[in-house]
Image (cartoon, rainbow, N blue to C red; front, side):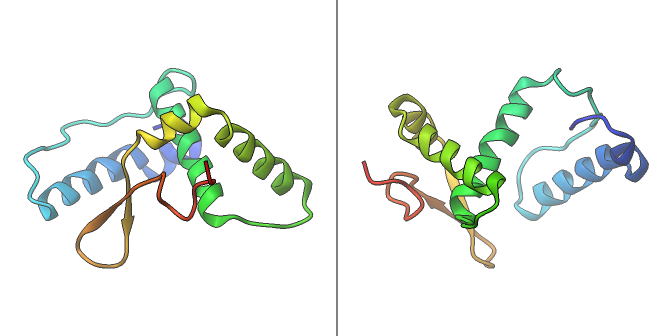
Length: 119
């Protein structure tokens, strides 16, 4: 988690730790998160990459249209990246899950998804 005064104020590191442990109990997983801490942006590239990819997937799912320059540019960037075979293969190799309000998650195949571009 990134370090910010807002995150410190609400104790986000402890909230996330608590929520992960609740989920582990709920799903009968055999793990416990014993510590969590905030870090300065730029120190955890894996987390930053995950946030970036989640943002792109969110853009695909929402598929917002509009005349706002930021929306147009965001959509153009995502389409451009999806047209890159290496990047598309990378995204296709990630496991995606959909929650439909039940107690289980359903795995979604990115390449078969209605969100994916035709190849």
